[in-house]
Every structure is written in C-alpha cells, then in structure tokens.
Image (cartoon, rainbow, N blue to C red; front, top):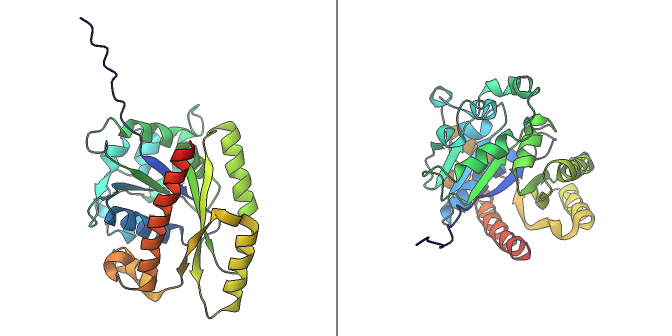
Length: 276
C-alpha cells in the first residue's frame, strides 16, 4: 500500500541583506552584533561576509590563515556554503568568511547565466546540509557598493536591512539604494522588501544627529526601527579584539541597543510572516 503521508520540506532560513552603498555607516558592526544578539536569544545564525575587506570575519576573530574556504569559493561554485561555514566564539553564531579574492569574483562569474543567483542557489542548498538545516537567520554583510556581489545578496534575500548613520548626507544615496531594491524585485527577486532601516552612530550631544533622525523618520515612517544605535567607544574597540561588542562589554550602551534591535527584528519578522 502506498504511503500518502506528506513529506515535510526543510525550512529555508530567513535571509536578510545588510546593505548601503555608502561606506562607514555601520553595516559590518550591525551584522556582527545583531547576529550575536539573535544567537544570544536562541536563534541559529549564519553571517555571510561578502565584503572583500573581510571586516566581519576579522571582527568575529576568524584569522585570515584559517579561512580555507570563503565566500569567493562559494560564488565561484567550488564549495557549498555549508563547507565554508565556520563556528565562532558565540554559541549559535556561524560565519562564512571573506577573503581579498572576492575582489575578482565579478570577472569570474560575469559570463555565467546564473551570475545573479549564485548566492541564492548556495543558500537554497543549505537546507539539505545536516549541520545547517536548523539555521533560522542568514545575515549577509554586503560591500559598500551596488555591485554584482550586492545584487547576488539581494537576489538571495527575503528582505534588506539598511543601516543609516545619523550624520549629514545620511539620506544621500538612499534613494539609489531603494531604486536598486525595486529593480531587483522587478527583475530577479519579486519577494524582496525593505525590512527596516536602523539608525546608527547617534550622538545625543550633537543637534545634527537629532535633526537627521527626525528627517529620516519623516521620510521613511514606520520602516525606521525604534531602536537607535548610539555612537559608542566600546563598540568601536571590540573588533580589534576579534569580539562582538556583546562579548567585549555587554553592559555598554551599544551592546544593549543591539539586544533591543534583535528583539525588534524578531517582532517585525513575525508580523511579516503572518502577513505573507
């Protein structure tokens, strides 16, 4: 007799791309510390370092000499994402590291028909890897450019999380990023949305920070997270010790802000899933 019991399909992790073509806005810091905060509250998280500088990898204490497989190898199709994945010092937090080889990856894959889908395909295959099957979040740390690498990240993602610094010119370039998201949605990934905008490097002593925050909230409304990441020395120091700020100094204002952000991300994700 044929067994007609439905087969439970493996669940794909929720994929968020942290993107902003402007450099120095806190993308990598947010990826590291949001990932750590999510892991601290019970999620299983993979950070995919897609920046050739490899700052997320260094900031999580992964020495360059130990990066035997990297996201370059993944995008070139030489290894699976699960093979490139490494454990970090944070329980429940994993990393697919980057190397400088990524600088040449666009030339390597430019002629391929699936050039914009390389990362999506790699993430889709993760659910069949026993070590990765229970991943709940994948955070992609994008380079500071709207390149083919960033397009790969957006094509692979469910949503884009935009770190935006509370400084002059904060909104400069944001319209271009939003336009790119719209182009990717129309041509490559119809499910892509802006998950939220997180304001970073806020300095309450600086009147300009308050004005920028007000302008961004007026322009983007409820897309902006309530949690604001303050400018904090301890958060800036942490990467030089190869640690997330939450391990370096849990009590500092920056660490506490990232814990609040993680909680807010999960609440927003629940709403998005319920509406899907």
